[in-house]
Amino acid sequence: QVQLVESGGGLVQAGGSLRLSCAASERTFSSYAMGWFRQAPGKEREFVAAINWSGSNTAYADSVKGRFTISRDNAKNTVFLQMNSLKREDTAVYYCAARQGVTYYRLAKQYDYWGQGTQVTVSS
Image (cartoon, helix red, strand yellow):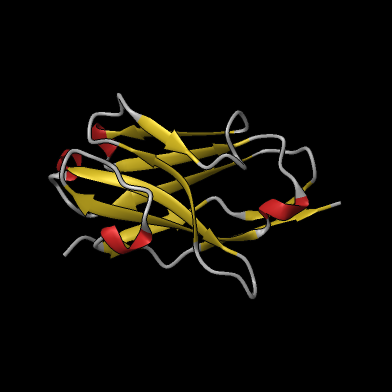
């Protein structure tokens, strides 16, 4: 059982930046692909970004491409989401997710483990 704990959320003005972290309990963290998803009130959970086991391949939703960067530090069992140029529409609860295997996926149903989420609120 992999436990994931997100941190780094908060309130930020539009145009600002936040860096989310997700710490994993699994010692074989490097064997997991990781993803970030978000869910705004009244909306379905949506894909934000994903990264493969080594960090050599990443993917982004069109809505965040060029503004968000996903990365990972396998030595620290942690995945990050650097969010720049934040917009009001980025307001949501952000979740990290893990899937055993080397390849990342964009669909939430393909991830096996989830964190509890961290709130990101962008004000105008």
